[in-house]
Length: 98
Image (tube, rainbow, N blue to C red; front, side, top):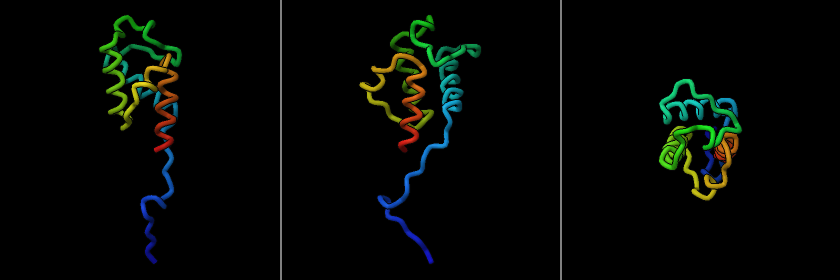
């Protein structure tokens, strides 16, 4: 017997990407954008902690994260973020909703 789901009947697949994996990938993005292989990123890291983090680098970070995780962020949700930890939580939430 062949079973067929209409797209709206298919169960949603939940993300299996852990927060730790997201942090690792985000750290790689930061190291690439800031061209610093030794850059350490923490949940509390924000633009005050990285000397070269200006508005252009901020855009590069967001675009890189969108590409890496296959997401599109709304400018309003990005503007509310205060640190890397909040960005990781947003990415995790959005991946879990996929």
